[in-house]
Image 1 (spheres, rainbow, N blue to C red):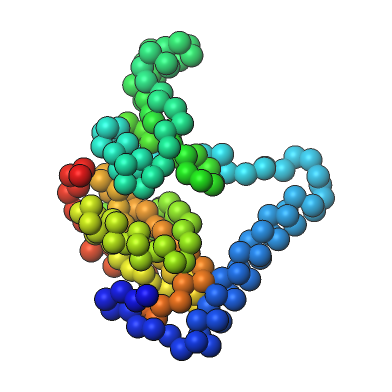
Image 2 (cartoon, rainbow, N blue to C red):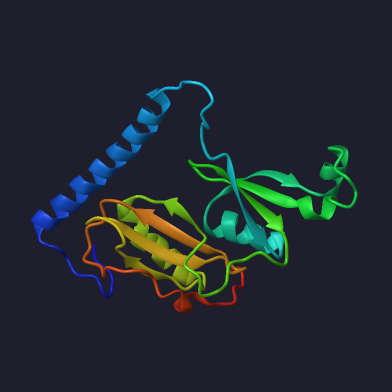
Length: 202
């Protein structure tokens, strides 16, 4: 299946990209295992626990991350919750957030904050979510249908790697990344100026 602007690759290139994708996933798994197995066996960090993103409106954030991206709400940390946890009164407002989880990886804490997003033209920081290679174009269509502009897919890694870039409603940069993508796509970094929009939840 191709998408506008994408062309079909020869069979040998398709097989090569799929094989590189499998090889890269095995390499990532081996790297994690090798880290666990190398001495010293104590005193190591085990994993990334969570990431935080500033969001000016947690209702909008929930509609975007849960309603559109399919995350699950793990926990709502509101003012009464923080008061019960004994947080100092002058810190409580800064601690209000929504915790969401996806199928894998660290949890994502969406903090209520009017500031903190990266500059609109910056490539970094950004959060990347892994998707299956056959689902990347469906995600592009889903985001575009919801009024979220995207850039990509574009290749920044080995053959078969593909990235799709977009912003959340607050300007936080996000990426969908896959290995084993078989379409012919351009190589290079995204034009982040193409990602500006004002989102209205469907």
